[in-house]
Image 1 (tube, helix red, strand yellow):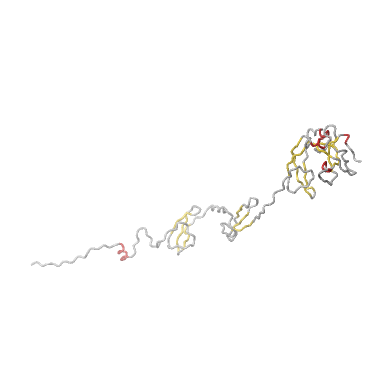
Image 2: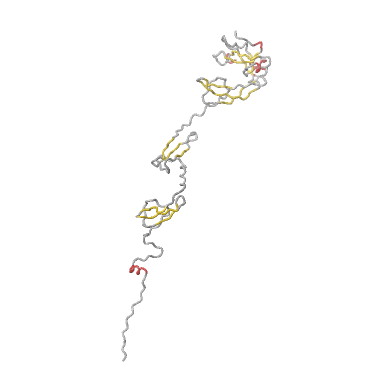
Length: 305
């Protein structure tokens, strides 16, 4: 009789997972994982040297300001430079700030200086310097109360020797001549300890017209325009130039020689009344004599008594 053999009970099949295998055989490095990083990653920007980092042995590559590669590594919890190339030449320093920096604010390069314009009326700039303490300071301060405007040229032609204001310089004028009004100029110059006008006299070519000498009255003289002037004798002292022989109409342009006078007249220095026709009427004038070169007929020429 055949005996029945007892069969072994088979074990149920099973699957060993990666996690289970890892728990049995220790840590398994998966592709793309670094067990020393501990989840750290490279910062997007170059880290500051000595700043803290989380993953020891992490190495990162960057490009510095000279376009050279530079390597940073996380060592003992701090970023350290692993590889660095020197710049040759060094990069240029940054430009001056667009706006004048505040005193005491941080600056970029010791000893650097920047100039900033002040108000339009202040020609000198304000200069700030980057000091040894790494902050901006003002080295040349400009305080500007706009200076007074320069003296203006007078509207009327001054007489030669009249006082003037220092700094006015040279001014254009129109001088009446025997040929009509002509342009000239006067310069304010220092004479001794006073500033005086030095008027550049001009002479007419041809000489002034003789019409002035034919006018018998002050009104007739005035009707001839600025080329003629009515003169009145002044008080003369001896010795010195004589007084004008008689009131009359004369060319306005002072003469220097007989050649500057109309034909048949002579150039003579005489004393006239500086107040002129106004001395006896509406105005009061204390002066009684002034020297003037005029063209006079030979019959009116006088000599000092």
